[in-house]
Image 1 (cartoon, helix red, strand yellow):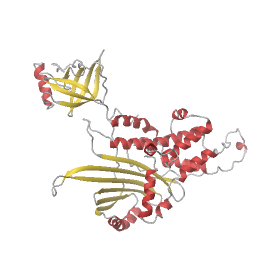
Image 2 (cartoon, helix red, strand yellow):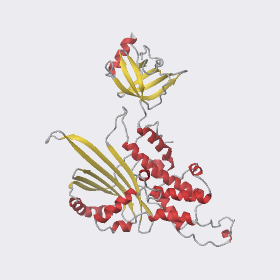
Image 3 (cartoon, rainbow, N blue to C red):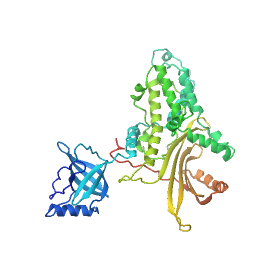
Image 4 (cartoon, rainbow, N blue to C red):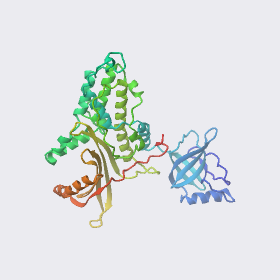
Length: 451
């Protein structure tokens, strides 16, 4: 790659393995191109015969044939490249391997896209079409209630206002199975100690839908208790009753919740409880399928979002951090049998650190938990817990002053509960308000939040 001697755009780059001309963006060349090339490559701190990864950040111009003008990112510095790359196809975000050969660069090849690229693209497709699980479940609960008796001329068949036919028995049974799997507030609050509560919470997490495909891959059947699979069974039953197929379902436009469109990548994202309404007429089949499509999209978004955070890489292709992340939404039924939602973010980070006392390295594991829920009688509550080895720190946030007082009164009991588990409590705090939610930033080429 020979560098240009004027600020005009450089010429294309040769095929992989052959020299190609490069120049830093906005650079004005000195007297000789060789001196300019050497200076520009020296500024990148790139030794002769050294190999390095570069990222294609922009395609500035594509000429006839295989010529392209690219903007590369090398060690955080921009470099404009005139590339004649033969049959190699480059796109924004691609990682390429280059080597300095004297005052030129050689393009050695293109790296496979990082794992997060395909996942993030699938995530971007579903972001605008998410339906809140609590709102969707609330509508399904109302469909199970008997419709109010109708009277008057509008109740005659074929006239406006006439009752729609009741839910077919198989559809009703499929919806009842979804609701029956939701834990109740009473069962969770009456659990007798951690021996009883722990299995309930473990089952609640396992059946949240986040691990649906993984459970099937381990040899489970479609009948395995799981929220996502249960919603799929409702869809399949509806389609069978209508004589439709999955292709028609995929062509439907899912119903979306405006709250999830505004901040689709913030999690936890505390949401107000859906309004409690009475009985409703049976929903048209098409509307019900659109509602279920939005709910399934919401579960899938949480799955893909978790994967993006877990497989995140830096610009040079290295892993950003050895952190695994799980984003879960856990619905339950309150005392009035209305669906409510808890949002749980779990992060696990494992690192090797130098042990100055014993010498060598020591494996350190840290867990972080963020939980958000809106309890009817207490309002929104937020919990942040950090656990490292046998040390724990926790903070509770409450938006209502009365709730804050109640929580403060319970802090000694919470501290003792941690100690009973053999944990050393470093910090235990309660504050009024709410914490700043974590928001994922994806590359603009993968996700445009404004779209």
